[in-house]
Image 1 (tube, rainbow, N blue to C red):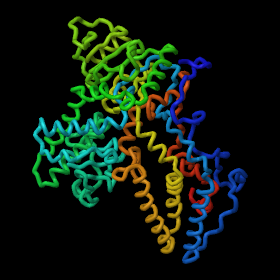
Image 2: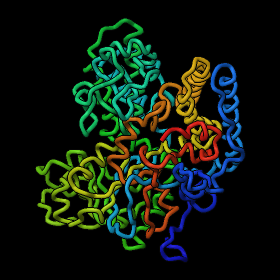
Image 3: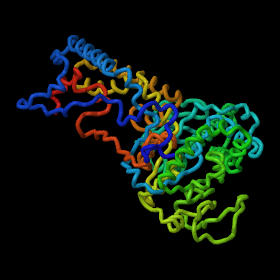
Image 4: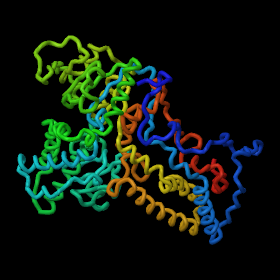
Length: 550
């Protein structure tokens, strides 16, 4: 699979036109801004098009001045966003939370579901319907819940569920509930009720929320793609019980729904559907998965598979899939696989039956079940940062590898592709770049200026709602609340070194590529924040108004 360059991937991602661009959609910055010093003239590259007019002392003239400056900046934002800026952010890129030199990575490890196997959305309604029927037939839930079908647009990944309150909520990186994103069943809960339920605040203490595995005393975080189905079914059942005034135990209902979704997976119903149907319908990117794995092997990398799923890799990369992997572990029972030393490895024969012999080495072409990472490290000697493991579940796949074992970690976030398309729109770009205006307006404290500021605050709130609905009408983006990162993004940054939309993103990079962390300035560093760089803030009319601030 190696190209003419020897180290170049042989395939390109579908829909990725031209070479992958590094960096974000920023104009090339000029020299750094200098401190205000009468002995040091301002660089001509940063000189404004015209010197900002001196602000009037106050009253109606100041109000008119501020409105004029506001409209100037809006026009400036529009003029400085060239048409091609909304296509520079590449959904097929790899994003780094930590610098990684791929030449130093000798061993690549993978999860299976939603990592090597990227299932199509067509599979989700079948999983939902099967789990719903299990609730009715095996757990004796009311037959009326059969009227609910899967709604793919209802929930997003990373939400929290307060079991005792039957609340599905979105929480930011600072433990605050984003108002307007709380649902009980399928109905929104008023902001006032949410604040009252949590003792007069939007804040939820850490001890209530979650440990490193996303499970607190009564609040659980949904982190993988399967959890979208769990949230949808849970909300539908709660909606039915509340709509028919039926009493229920919140903890029992939560556990029953979780077990029903898990049963579809454990009983291999999902894989049976895949076998019985057209493979392309459910696993549409098998050729790209095979291209990545083959290319890694061709460049001397060692591969292994650790998954909770049964061994059915032939669905993804064909009947000779075992030849690609040096070690294959199935039904590993992650995350306890990474922490529990007690479970030994068991070998499986060709029919999937367990063997009784003691495992003293892990052989290529053989399939092993359960085991633990400590024995895995002892038998393979694959330790430290030369190992890069990919998964889709931040808690089950990646947490312990960061906390205990020092492997490099990559996360697959399929939603990234859609969110990047939205971020690339002109509407979103304008909202992002205009946020800094409010901070500059606070330098004026007279009554007229405050009226202008209040009007802009109202506009900001309206833009917030519009921007949220661009991602999800109920919950917005999985990466941000109105102005903060989400708790999901906080975990993603903490537990993964790299993240990308899918495995096929690797096809855009050489195997000797170094993925650098984008040098985003800290808040206390030079004021070249993303939104200001995008609009050449050094040329903004308000810069002169802020000159007195040191």
